[in-house]
Amino acid sequence: MPVFCAIVVAIVYAFSLDGDVGFWDTGELQTVPYLPGLMHPTGYPAEILLGWLFTHVVPFGDPALRMTLFCALCVALAAGCCCAVGQLLGARAEVAAGASLCFAFTPVVWTHATHADVTDPALAFCALTLLAGAYAVDRDEPRALYAAAVCAAFALGTHGTVVWFLPLPVLLVVMSGNVTLRRALPACALLTVVLAAALYAYLPLRSAMVTAAHADPTRSLGIGSGKPFWDWGHPSTLSGFVDVVTGASVKSPQSLAAILQPQGYPRDAAFLLGQLRDNFGRSFSYVVAALALAGAWGSRPRALLLLPLLLVAPFAANFAAESDASRYFGFPFLCLWVLAGVGVSRLSGRVPNAAAVARVGALALVAVAGVEAYAGSALFGQRDDALGRTYIGDVLLASEPRAVLIAEWVYATPLAYAAYVEHAVGERIVVAGRAADYARELPGWTRTRPVYAIAESPPEVPVSVVLVRALGVNPDAVHDPKLYRLGGPAHPR
Image (cartoon, rainbow, N blue to C red):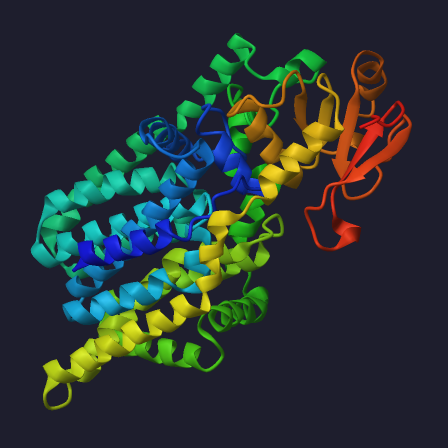
């Protein structure tokens, strides 16, 4: 049944993939693994390495689509794990399958699964870690704990927020009372640390290689090391490595510390309730919560599955650098649907004809998944999206071949994909950031090259600024990015 669920979800995701080059972090994830280069904090070395392998092995589609497919398959795998964990914790097979489909088509899960997103592989590895831990407890199988340790290492190497989720399988083992499994925990922990450290060693090694090979074209402009796409943060230095891995520059440590600030819990609780309402509806969110509580009731190990939801809410609510905090709720929602499936199975077991009632409950869950799929059917139109490629074409058409293109982060990533993956920008050099960040360099650049800035409003720089064209990315004209010529007349085209 878990394999069947994963296949069904993978097929639906495959037909609803965003087929375009993305903006923001999406475009970065479609670019960096293919190079391979280095990503923004916390580095995501496992995702870069696995993405490099996937995008170079899969023989169809362009690299952007391959990376999106990789992320979709990761979430489909997580859906299969949702079904398997539910069965191990007491849900009937058909009920666990229905719950896993509900998880897969939860709006935030489906939306992020069909875009290249750094949280998708992290979700898969957390789900695999939980599955291996639950299997070890259910079958008294210490070897499964070593599989959990490997998956946990890859989870840590994929995304820093998994620190809220990985204690769950450890606590399941501790609370099982199985002495043999407990004795294996130190060795498993050591394996996780060693393997995760090996993955993070990619960051300084690759940074040093990029520097030695002069692979980053922006260095030819006299810009220092550590710029996006090729060498973000320059982690070949100790300070750079610490900054990237801890996310200090985006205030990740302060956000992680939010869980220790009780005065913020009312706001965090309101944020959590908002996430539940947004994904399940105001009324149905109470039904899901009630079923999950029924699944957790009377069992401390099962009750632990509520922990990820409670731990991630303070972090997500206080992570000011994140514009899409909902994506951190993938694994907590997986645990919630596991418990809901267990709850349906437990409630059906208390009435006559338990098997028949359970089948009705499973059908009800499948119906809920169907309603979710219908509500999200607009995602199937993503296959024809072309906004990113249209934007790239407009920028290239309106700029000169040897131009320096300075683009704010949201708008820099599609251009980086065109430059470094498809090699379609000629001699143009893409610089991520605000034009004002390069105020000292601009006079020199404008003497030797055409220089353009892509921003929503005219940059404040010590050279002339001429509007060339609006780029038609956002429907709101005020916030639509525009192409500005810096230090010279507008390009005649």
